Image 1 (cartoon, rainbow, N blue to C red):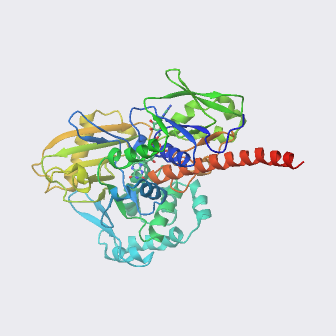
Image 2: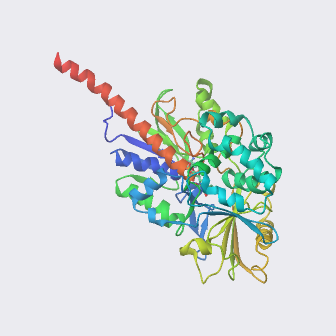
Image 3: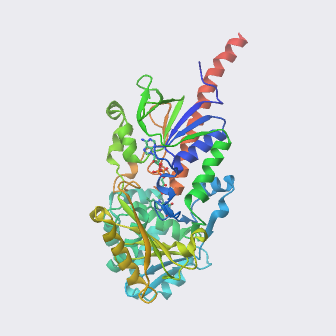
Amino acid sequence: MQPTEQGQRVVVVGGGLAGLAAARKLVMAGQQVEVVEARDILGGKVSSWRDADGDWIESGLHVFFGAYDEIFTLMREVGIYGNILWKPHVLRYTLAGGDHFDFENWPLPSPLHLMPTVLRNRYFTWGEKLTLVKALPKIVLSNDQYYEAQDALTYEQWHLAQGVSKKMLTRMFLPMALALKFVPPEEISARVVLDVAGMFLRENQASRMGFLAGSPQDKLIGPIAADITRRGGIIRTGAKVRELIMAGPRHIAGVRLADGTEVRGDAVVLALPIHQLNKLIPAAWRGDHPYFANLAQFEGVPVITAQLWFDRQVTGIDNVLFCPDGRIPVYADLGNTTPDYAVGGRSRIEAVVAPARQIFDHDDKAIIDQVWRDIQNAFPQRTAGAQITKATVVRIPQSVYWPKPGLNKLRPTQRSPIPNLYLAGGYTRQRFYDSMEGAVASGNRAAAALLADVHAIHQRVAVPALVLSEE
Ligand SMILES: Cc1cc2nc3c(=O)[nH]c(=O)nc-3n(C[C@H](O)[C@H](O)[C@H](O)COP(=O)(O)OP(=O)(O)OC[C@H]3O[C@@H](n4cnc5c(N)ncnc54)[C@H](O)[C@@H]3O)c2cc1C
């Protein structure tokens, strides 16, 4: 029987933002959707859970950028856009010894909005600033073709080839690269840094940042999942997919879970982290299609997140903080940024610990000691006498995909060579790389491709029937 345009059974594997975005679009288009998620909680890299004390633990520090779009539309549709609290539009870099420098955004047409802050900056010399100013046209005025050509280089290679000062690399762009993808400038494609920097410079509001008002589970993931189930979608957690069920070499019939249960469907969306996807791809597909063979070149970046609770206020800052010294390139005092976490004005710092590869196996105490040293270095006065009341460490061995040079052209489209199989996830092809926006955009694209294909099949079935009836 040919599937009808409405009511296709679609299995979405993975309950991160990509899978949830795809599932919601498909449910809204009248498809019968079942999401299968390996863990007991949804949200993937944006997941959060309560510990034994009832405190929320987050899998990673998450901020929204003004440049995002599709995740905002999703949040507006679900009625949760108001859960984002936008912070003052300033990028603050804290420095060992207690000093800092800021990049403030001025209400001027782009790219002039950053000029006053560059001119006023006293941390870099005029000579150093001039080297950056000379390189700016290439960042701001270039098109995607130029950025793509730079994908052959690391950001460090590009930076030095333009003659931009080394100090700007190690003090400004190092924390930026580490905050973006948890790898240093010598390991990240120049394309990614130039693309993001260009966006921030071209669009006045693109670099403003916002936090959720509470845990990702309460303020983002939970409401999206509830919206899907309210519309008739099914979400199964604790359901790890072990293999794909094939009905012929070019047709996927569903998935088999680790406990042997089969979840069958007319189409499947795989919204998995790349290393998990690679485990499910049949070897024969890699031989038949470069599309699948290329996926072997992708890998996830290890990252650690530390959360420290304090007996007092130690930062006085309600915003994102960047840091070129030590191991915490980006961090925030969630006691100040996130009202649901605020307790008596005390600090609760969440820090990205990166690069994490060399210290991934260090014990929790060693990692927390390192983070605490970095915070003390950044806020020597405020931290004097402060005590840590509690601390946690979350390790993700393979988190976002590693955008190494040369990889961008291999990022897969959401439509795969298998006619009823679609991919979604931060690593798939869309504008925003592996981010919350990228994940939602990829899920939307996977759903759109699937719906377009169903529509096309339906049209092909309908046309001969019409011709026959005319005869
Ligand atoms: C520490 C950290 C900080 C970050 N900070 C930011 C930020 O500030 N701003 C921003 O925009 N982005 C940030 N990101 C990136 C963002 O979290 C990701 O890009 C996005 O969440 C990826 O979503 P996804 O759905 O593609 O993948 P995932 O979130 O990884 O979802 C995939 C899901 O598939 C499930 N799964 C895996 N294997 C199986 C299987 N076999 N069967 C069934 N299910 C399976 C997983 O459990 C998971 O739930 C950060 C990421 C990390 C790690």
